[in-house]
Length: 206
Image (tube, rainbow, N blue to C red; front, side, top):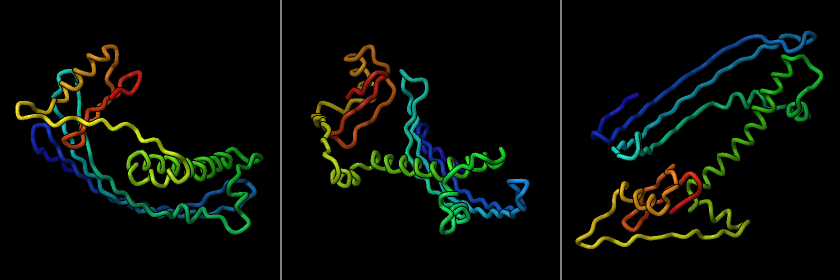
C-alpha cells in the first residue's frame, strides 16, 4: 500500500493485492459415512485506489471527503464444487434435521449462509446500483412502476461582487433555520448551479 501526500489536505492512496490458497483434507460428516477428500484452490486479486480530502472544519473534530475505485476478482471454484447434480437440488437446498451437530452446522453454512445469503447479496447489490446510478437504472424501473421526479433546486450564479459560499456558511444557514437539528451528513454542489444538501438527526433537509 502506498500513500501520497498531494497537499496538506489531499491524500492519494493505492493498494494492489493477490493471494492464492490451496488446501486438501479429508472430512467425515457422519460416523457411518466414508471419508471424503475436499480440495480448495482459491485465487484472489484486485486493486484499491482512493483520493481523500481532509479539510479543517471548525465545527467538526474530524471531517473528510473520499472517493475511489475498488476492483476485485475471485475464482468461483466454491460454486462449481457445490453445484448439485441433476435430481439433487432438494437435498442441496434443505437442512437435514436428523443429523449430527457437525452436519447441522455444515448445512447452515452451505444452505443459509451460502445459497440464501447469495440471494440477499444480489438484492443488496442491485438496489445499491439503483441508488448510485439512477440515471441508468430508472428507465428500467419506470417500465414496471411510475417514478416521481424529485425536486431539483438550483443556485444562482454569483455576480462579479459575489462568490460561492463555503461549506461552513452552508451549514451555518441550515443550523440557523433548523437550530435543533444535528448534522449527520452533507453533500456538496455538483456544478456551478448545484446546491448543498445535508441530513439532520431527525429528517432530510435541503
